[in-house]
Amino acid sequence: GAVVSQHPSRVICKSGTSVKIECRSLDFQATTMFWYRQFPKQSLMLMATSNEGSKATYEQGVEKDKFLINHASLTLSTLTVTSAHPEDSSFYICSARAGGLDTQYFGPGTRLTVL
Amino acid sequence: GESVGLHLPTLSVQEGDNSIINCAYSNSASDYFIWYKQESGKGPQFIIDIRSNMDKRQGQRVTVLLNKTVKHLSLQIAATQPGDSAVYFCAEKFRDDKIIFGKGTRLHILP
Image (cartoon, rainbow over all chains, first blue to last red; front, side, top):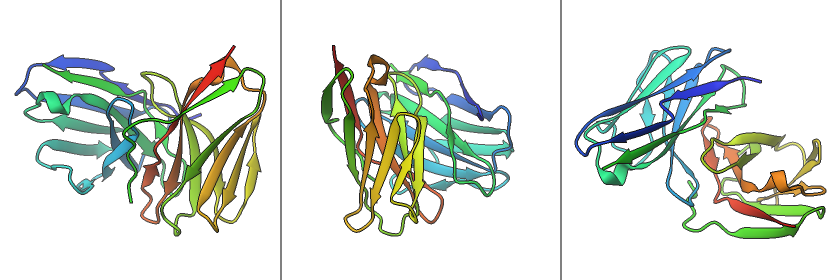
């Protein structure tokens, strides 16, 4: 099956710094990638949808200036958490979808801890 | 709309018994539904899906049932094994291609 990777798997940073998380589709071209956030013992919450070569679409309540998303190629999307604070500590998960198909393939997630 | 659970309900099942996990979805216009399994510290893993023009679909040891009248989805796992311990999420695809997750149920296997 299709594989989606994320890097890093874990990151610890100081409050006020920025963190970049990469999401890659390894064996298919992802026209659309999605970013989710999951707090402990909760469900996945969709943050934004990114289409290759265009601006991301953010869900209500998600600050686009804080969570910068770039989908520069058909195999890579990045999420940058700017000026991270402890409340941004969470499990960030991306998924990727090939054009015209329903199935989304999920990455393994990135655990962000902001001190 | 989006569904975020504050506390995951838990289903405890004896090893070898069948498990039935239920889910209520929100959008009557959704046309595609998926069940995911998530183990601790990992991303969601696809289990089985079903389109809105079907009411039942079977996989290996799993069956998904869809009742559009009451917007209800269920996942049946036959002969539950210790490796089935995880959190299970139903998800629905909205017409704008977003996949929105339900609250999740933790499946706990009793020895």
